[in-house]
Amino acid sequence: MQTSEQFIASNKTVKEICKTLGADSLVYSSIEGLISAIGLPEEKLCNACLNGVYPIKETQTKL
Image (cartoon, rainbow, N blue to C red):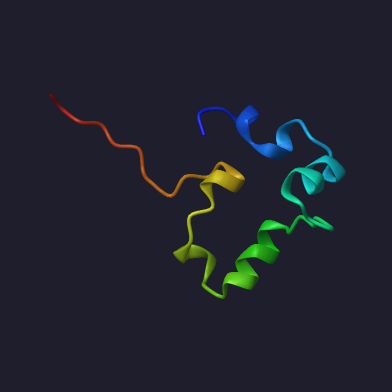
C-alpha cells in the first residue's frame, strides 16, 4: 500500500466492506484485543502500522 486511501476501510462503510468481501458481518478489534488474541507479549510485536509507534531508534550515519 502506498497511501492510506488504498485501504478498503478508508472510504467504505462497514456494510459496503461486507458486500465487497462477501461477508455477513464485520467487527473491528482493539489493538489490545489483537495483542491478547496473538498471545505474545506486546514488546515482541511491531504495532507500528496500527499505532504509529516505530520500534527502531533513530541513528545518524556518517558518509
